[in-house]
Length: 260
Image (cartoon, rainbow, N blue to C red; front, side, top):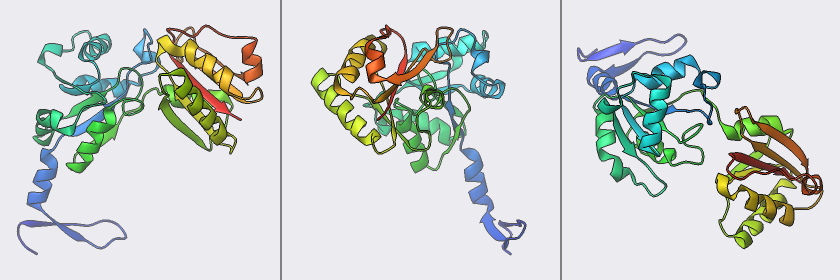
């Protein structure tokens, strides 16, 4: 065996060789943690596990949607968090990996980092996947931390099919385009697949109008509003039933699910 190689043994497996140089390179790179945040809870302890909070406050490098929101959240889980000693890189849906060159250089140099969404889990309906895709290309380890996801929480509380489902994110902004997409999602749901989508809070009443207009009366619609908050309300009824019992949804975070 070459003196610069180390022999590793695993049970029920043949030994293999890895160079000390390769081990050194692997050890030098930091990890990228997918950092969940609350869905608006005043008390983060209700939805963010202690180990997730501990890892989060140990980091001094973040890729985030909004720097101000990220700084405020970090201070909410640790009043002494050194935000002025922490580097934040903004990411958006139009961000390119090249915009994060300095971020990745720091991680490649051994610094651990976090990717943080505005709410819930990063990488779901936000640009966190841009960071993750580039991390995989660079051979950087990505570690998802446990935390709340409004999409998954809505699904499990909806009573709709959790065996086959699809998340379509945000629908078209214009009403005709949105209704066309809703009809297409309803068609897909008729095959037994729950369709999940959402909208920015200030347009929720408009999208509800389009759902009630475009969908068949018998289609089941779950409206999951204010998930994990004190005002949480999750109900599944037919479209016909919702027409006679409409909730006010504007300025509330909502996830919509349909199944024909």
